[in-house]
Structure formats: C-alpha cells, structure tokens
Length: 233
Image (cartoon, rainbow, N blue to C red):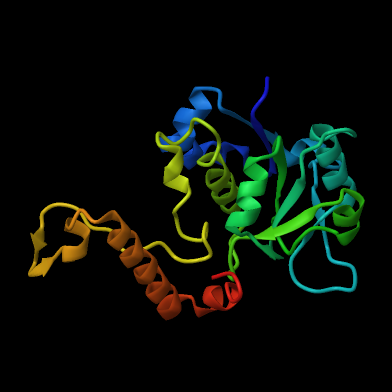
C-alpha cells in the first residue's frame, strides 16, 4: 500500500486517531489516502512493571525515557531501509514550518515519538537519529497533541484530501506572508461592509488588494516573516 504512512510511538495509543479521525484527515484516512498506526511504548518496557523511564543521571526532578526502550520501539516500527524520517516531538526541537510540512507531505510518511516526562535519553536521540521538532514555544504534557498537529498539517496537503488543490497554495506561510482578510455574505454586517474592491469584478485589482492586505497584516502581527522575505519581493 502506498501513501503517507504515520507511525506514532506513544504511552497513550488510545488518544489516536482522536481529531485525526474526523473532518478532512478522517475522511482521507477512511479513503486510504494515508495510514496511521500506533505503538504502545510500554510494550517495550523493562521488568515486571514494564518500566519505560528512570531517574535522571546527575539528579534532578522528573523522569527520563530510557534509551534501550526507546531504541527498541523505534527500530521495531522503522527497521533499516525505512526511508521515513524519525521525529521526536519536543519543546526544544526546531520549529515546525509550513516548508517542513510540505516536504513531509511529499515523502513516504514519518515515525513520530511522543516525548513524555523530562525528555528522552540523549543517547537514544543520537542512536536512532531522531529529529527533534517543536510546534511552538510552550510545553505540553506530552508529544501526542503535537504529533496530531503535525500529522494534520501534513495530511491536508496530500493529493486528493482537499477538494480544491489550490486551497492550500494561498494560505498563511505558503508565500511567506499571513493570509489576507476574507469576506462573504451578507454585504453589510454590524455596520461593516465588504470592501468595494472585492465586489468590483476587477481581478487584477482584487489580487493587488489581497497582496497589500496580506503584507500589512503580516507587518502588524508577524514582522519577523517580512524580515525573512527581504530580497524576494
């Protein structure tokens, strides 16, 4: 079977598919446009209690996922020759971008390890060649929600998932700008009218308005994105 194949390693497999089982991603999953499997990390735990973590070397609060447990789970779902990237959802990872999402959508899938506790033993990260990915500058209870966010962002870009393939081409971040303002019926609402230019029928002027609106919005809310576009306009 072809298509995007997501394998999620987690202590809470019952959380999946969760939101991924409804709307666009759920319909695409049902139609076989992508695949989802979960591995229960505790199945690879050690001892009578199937322990997956231990106290941090050097002392400190919390627990750390053991390298032997993590490596065995990753290699069970991603044997040698598997071309899928191995991702660790972690607040210390590189920020997830639309460019990275699109690259993943163009690939065979991904193996996603959901971090828990204080983190993962660094030796497992290095041994398994895990790419640490963050969905934002904040901390969650675990990597499961982050994995769902990443998968949803990828799946919606897969061929056949969105009804109109152009829908994903003009969204926020695809052009380096936030998306322009949108309007629909009624023409007047709460004392506010649709900008006249959008009702003019002049497509060139409408596109120019949208570009300028997107640039102004980006400058007000995300000036860092404008800085990254210098030399590309």
